[in-house]
Length: 423
Image 1: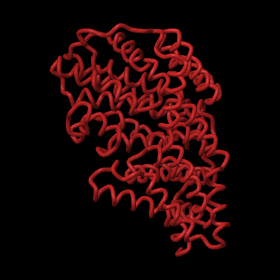
Image 2: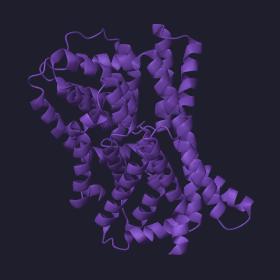
Image 3: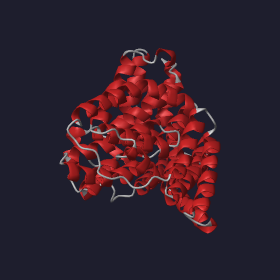
Image 4: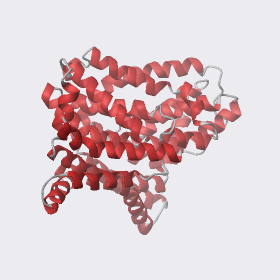
């Protein structure tokens, strides 16, 4: 037991260092998460027996594992596509298009659908919040609706795509760590969360009956929405995610050059900035890979699986263990991507031991992490939304219906063994 706890201690060093220093600083984004991973990584190498070069080799093999490197390449392509599309004006065009389709007297439901569509297209909750929150807050001010309510609608919808999108980093990591296709995970995840989304949409239809629609919407440039639509459609049909992103990058260049949004050098610069913006996530991914490999090498993975599963009886208990573990780590790190990176390997081991379907494991990892991330007032999404709307983050919590709904849906999927085909 002592050996197993020692092997796991680097993970505890990371969580405690990041959590404690963040609480002391009263700011979860003042302490770089890369520094916490660096400290934990150095500590993991120090406590590993054997010659120093051998210990470093174990860490490096984990950091450079083929699955980790595949994730790195996907992150590079995703960064290049997302930023070149943004610079080209795709986000503004997509926002204007979705707002133009809002049915009258259904502002809340329409904003929820807009946030769902945009986040599903661009794969990021933060990007959706940045794009829609200023509009939502302005509309609330014009119509007399609650700013906190309208902003919470956008936050909830943004997690729809964060959870389901093919180019979301949480989807990429969840599928890679569990060894399944993004298209298969999308199908399973849809069975779990779409009923919840429809219920929440119905609630917003009811609550929004007395809210007026926006007075005016900017002109729509439909061609600039095309890259997101092509990425979404090709991904749904199961095309390899790297091919999907490459097609998206080419389309942003062609359309951006044709519309005069940028020249060739501007396109290259946008792609370069996007790749650079993924640098921290790439570093975190590699350090997490090395850290978890050292923990596994020292027997920590076997220890935690034994401790977690000794009271588990059947697949339900194993799935609850996976959901609970990723949720706890998310609470401590305030980052759903990092929580999946941290727990993914352990979840895969639990899944293999209890014969779980990797597609459902990936869905549960993503859904439980999005539930927690969507409800913590110190998470990036809620802080960003509150800042853009000039309100207190705590005021959003009573109105965050969607994160609660998908959490309940995930728990129901475990208890009811749903969907049956993947359970």
